[in-house]
Image (tube, rainbow, N blue to C red; front, side):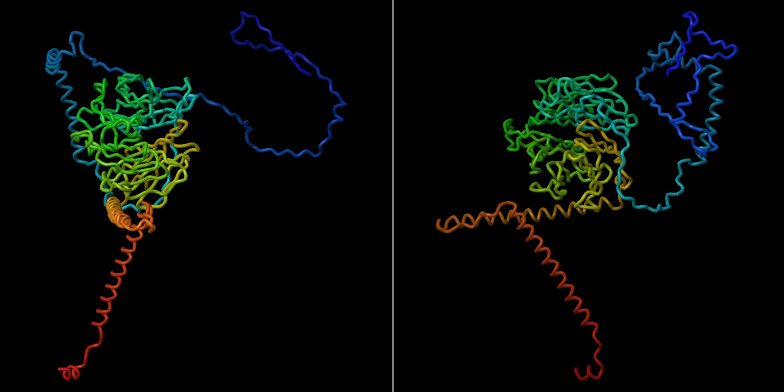
Length: 592
């Protein structure tokens, strides 16, 4: 049975305050007891009920509104001047200042402030507030195991998710990062897919700080190290654009489509220059183009990545990665789609001489290429299922390499603080941290960042924060433990010795490999003069030659070790013979 009582009120009384009055009680409904209902229940006797002498609480859940912050610019104009004085006119300003300086009130105020300021200066001179009292005290270093923790996660705000293809850190501290979003699958994007990329505030993952609106999705984006307001971007349609965040979300200027790349611009980098406006870009169309953002009408210079050095566009290798070190302003390196690493020199006299060397790197595209910040002669390349460390002096093979991974590698980079540490991202969503001093066969730390492929990686300049971009546009910000971004004792010397040792080993193996190749050629030419009926001995292929050369190398090393041990034994025998008992005097006289 439902009990309903309707309270009526006139329209004119809506919104008025309630006036309460005392009156006698009214009976609206009277429900008579029904004894037949008691037959459905059993009397409980005695009744036990537990009570506590605390206030009863009820549990509630509430969902608060998300707090969103925004940043807005403000224009400041100089004020405080009289109406008849124009602050832009130097003469009027100078005249007014002289007038104020002659005023007695101004002179008295300055004198009063001068005594206070003099007191503060004397205090500062008496006490050194920056003095370190415990410099000489050595801290007990506790060795902690390498680890990393997730600080923030930045997700693509759009419904149709895109890949976070490139990340760039704000040059003036770890406050912001720019992320380029693009769907790299051929014809994988629908017409409704957003083309925006974003600048994120590290502390606010809820909403991007700024949106970059290109005409084509951005494949890569880079902050200008000399001017943190300027960003450079490479688009999916091959155009190069740059933004000034002070001027809004639209690009300030773009390269014309007829003078741009024919394929997606996979990498853009700023060049060390006096103006801070020069940059260059690479693409899978096989070209490297140099630009000046003050004049984006056409590239200032062009290089075709033809390994035959004939500048033939039909034989050009598509570029997937670029490497540029500011300490070597004329040199740069390109990682190609064919797996080779091409070393170039921009200031060569002819285009053919610009391609200096070609390193046979990987079985697939080279997705990442970077010189070691402390040892520029050694560089890291990431592609196929291995990461390799190279030396400029050896072009035939790398000096060190990682184990063969089960999943494909997508990106990698060196630590800016520690010369022995580098990072690798993989298709299975893991981030591997390698410390070649600590381990050479396995990563020091392997971290499952997400359950989808990771495509981009960038370490902040202080070495503490790492940002990883995934296939669905999720950018994960990680903080490393102290041991992974603090320089270890004597680390530089150890890494130098390791690189030199491995370079020397590869040189010996390479020399031995060439000798064996010459012997094989001589043998095959000698066998060619024999009778055709005689079966020629099959020539060894390249892998067999390498294994044979390596086995001979180790046999030579073992032989040298045995020789050294024999010499030590002979010296020990001589020393033992010298320690024998002396001859008696009578025997000495007889012998004489």
